[in-house]
Length: 285
Image 1 (cartoon, rainbow, N blue to C red):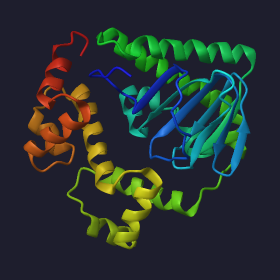
Image 2: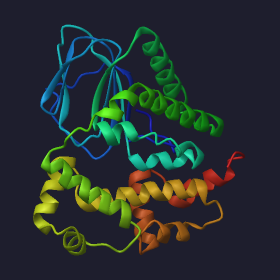
Image 3: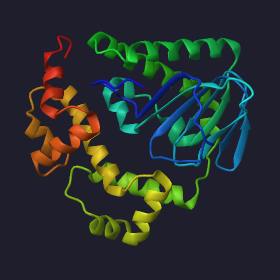
Image 4: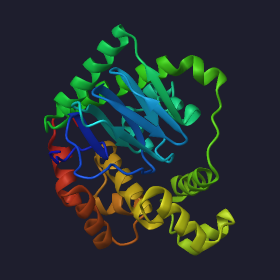
């Protein structure tokens, strides 16, 4: 993967045919995930289900359910996958959010879709467009990337419409536990929150809260909190062009600009003032 300043997904692999040296382990995370199977021989483990895949199969996941592919290495295994934070959809603007593009992930949690030949071709065209624009620094391509991503979410919405009207999938106790923590952080990430206050507000044991969150997501609670704040800062740099770096720092929930700059550079790969400068110099901002 090639890093760049407008990396909107946490992970992105297009028509990826590489395999790890060892066995792929079951894992989970707080990001939503989209997985598309191009070809090979693979069963996909998703919670307590094992799904035999066919080319053209699409899986959406809320990420918290343990999942992994079980690959038959006798055939070339090719897939496209990417994970993203739900709040990324703020980049679409209010009008495009009138129809909630994340409803399939929120309602169905995890869902396997076997595409028809026509829908398979449409989906692969959208994935190709996402890949075409994903690594470009051009501001026009940046907008076309967002348009292609929104198009994919709307295609998924359309394909899941009937299931969403009738299905209500259950989640495990640990998933529900982590979702409660994530929802709390989503509501209060701009405030000065600590583990003691969080545990008290959620009526949870502090050490159990930390343990479950890390085991389910692979991140500490504060790792996730800081990532959420930095993601929001990136969004505000695009929408609040008149705000200074210090303004964004405080609005995103950081108390000290030096800490904000250090965490931002670690996560994004560039200093916040450089990121802001690039956005403001874009003629399409």
